[in-house]
Image (tube, rainbow, N blue to C red; front, side, top):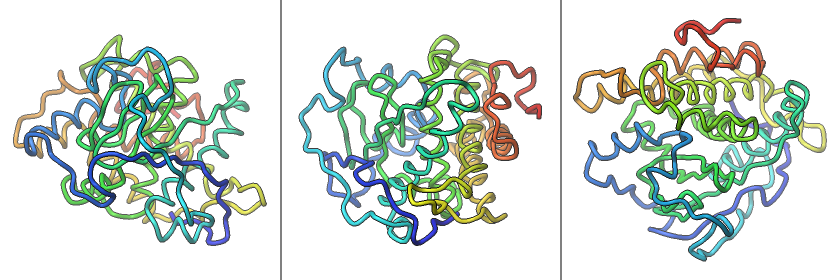
Length: 306
């Protein structure tokens, strides 16, 4: 899925945080491939227990406790900029998500949407959930209501985990993290901590719901306009859907465990299988319904009901 070239960005939607190596630097694997797989299993795509893995929670203050330099993106003004530059793509995807959820959350749940923070960082970052490095992949911190992205992760997602490199694979990641913000607003994200592991666990249901919310965004993304009335995104194609599903499959617990050279152990799952992640993305995409995305009430996570 690509942006309409003349779609307009809202401006200053994303913050850029200093820290670690310069932009474009390599990801430190932190103990080799096995180390990053362990971290990805626990934190990839931001479960509700980020504080447990990133460090002690910071009980107060802004979501920049270390005093890092903070800036904004430049030259990210149009859809054409987003099509050409990955940082701009994250920013304008956030604009699109704001527009979709700004209308759908109130219409479907009666809750007013509050924009999450969206921060780009390189190497490492300080958050109210503790300090994080690029090893953890993208994540959402409930304590400061902010989604964090080191965009070098998207290359890792393709090269290490085999996802397609198309735009919707990347936009799916952003939409998934904002899905956790919707859970935070609706009071559901804490369920991941109450039941943290297993194929039917609250953690898995939380992640699958965020996948469904990402699909819900895709359902509306090509018809929801910017402030001037131009839809942010062009109409989805079969290739776009294949890109998103490849990303969802690449980060399934069973796929990650197998790629690490080990056996598949459902009792340790925190995110769900590759097939489940694809199915719940499609449930949101095919219906555009928050109610359909109620994974916590689903009797069969392998068969979304709609």
